[in-house]
Image (tube, rainbow over all chains, first blue to last red; front, top):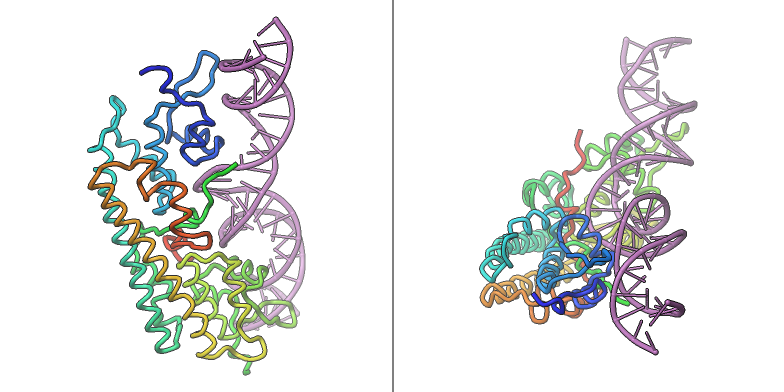
Length: 155
Length: 155
DNA sequence: GATTGACTTGAAGTTAACTTCAACTTGCAC
DNA sequence: GTGCAAGTTGAAGTTAACTTCAAGTCAATC
């Protein structure tokens, strides 16, 4: 609890790989919390880095900030989240990743079929049939987004 | 080339699973072409359905419209694209899908490690380390986007 | 105690991929 | 030949996830 444990916004930005503006945005959106100095400047506890690591990973997996927010809301506020807290959350991802991998494999194999038959037919091709898309991947499923491509905010 | 082969915008929207506004948008962006009636209304040839199927599949795989546009630009304008034309394009996707699957598997396995060690450490966890993200997945890689979740435009 | 670089806020801007709107025109059925 | 559903356009609106800006404040150093 030494004050030296606290980090400024630019320090966190640097170490966490996010732009300061993103940190402020995340705070407004309720994903992050910062204490304040007497003068009103943000000071972050070390735990924020783990939180940011989690946020980045979640974004890479395709979760929206809103989803991440609600997942993070499951963390205990009363104490510093421990290994078990994080593990519980992470475990849920495993299933999600498995689903995503399966969906992609299905997509690839469907594509093989298409290459084989050269069809890309609207009626049959599972790559693109609109109803198939809904049926195959379900309403809640999401996949790795362009976010994964973004360069983590640099200088 | 019978005029009866031509479809109206709402017919294509219905059959292709896109909203009419999306079709007009795609046309503005150079992904689609439509002939016009004397009065200026759009009429689509049957081939547009295959093109739309391709666009949908590409979107599901995470390509931006810009990328799709440039891929589609590789199709011959002088003749109706044939089986071989589409196959050539589709083949390139196979590699892309393989890459995406590999990336996801790496992510999942990294996550296993994290669950095992409970770390989610910024320094070590390949799930979230900013530089790892860039290094592991490369600048050009993209993954399945929220687009896959969207319901294909309905009534 | 003055300098100055880092920090603050709210508001507005950005991008992709569309959708919605208003005002007007076509084209097919009767 | 008329009625009206369906089509047309350009402009503006939408959403997520931020960034940028302007105008001003803080805090660490000299």
